[in-house]
Length: 285
Image 1 (cartoon, helix red, strand yellow):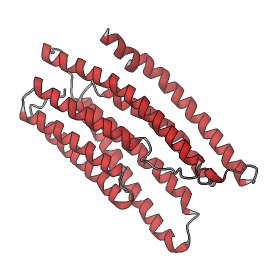
Image 2: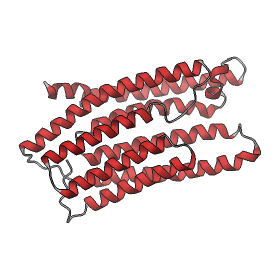
Image 3: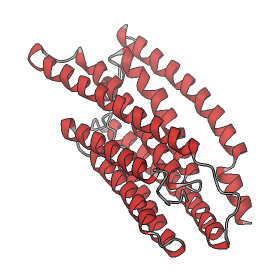
Image 4: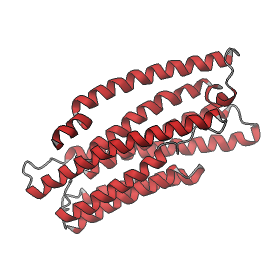
């Protein structure tokens, strides 16, 4: 029964359907947003409360990237039962896209700034571009290392129980994901109507990463019931710490947030490198 529920929520068939839907919806959303920007440019659309969303053609890029990000978050949850390394790697893929979306948003706002602040805006975009490269490299490094690790053909009962517990946790996190997404979109929409909404990465992601940290801590504690090896505990603790730093970075604007992202990437990459040493006995579970 539990296996069937996991297959229904996080199985390959569901993943294929959601991926196709996300791509098509992203294309449709981009075209609609682009059309709104065009109408606004020719004074055919009056949206005082949402002027910041349509005053530049670059704003149209925000919609498809938000939809793709929503799908990538699902992929992140889907990777949780596989291994801690896989889920952390997916986490950096999500943050990489989040930073790219922020860069597009900031580029759209550059033309609206005066000359006195233009230099500082460009400098910050340059820093964000460097952060993107660091995060992208980290995500690729995680993919490379995890692709080298071969899953064991034999799993004892304790490992199978642990994997099943992670599947249950992943299914629960999908439910939380839907609830948090619904609440965030609803709150943001009402804020826009009241003239208080803004394009911020804290919308949804700040709350979701809070829940992601809680799920990582649960996995860490449960794993210690099955595997008492210190390197395993230290590795997973390091990964949880990198997630906490990312969460702080999401809620921290400006250069401090950028530094937090780079710090998290460096920490996670070093922990992965140390734990993937041939002499290390750290399990990938």
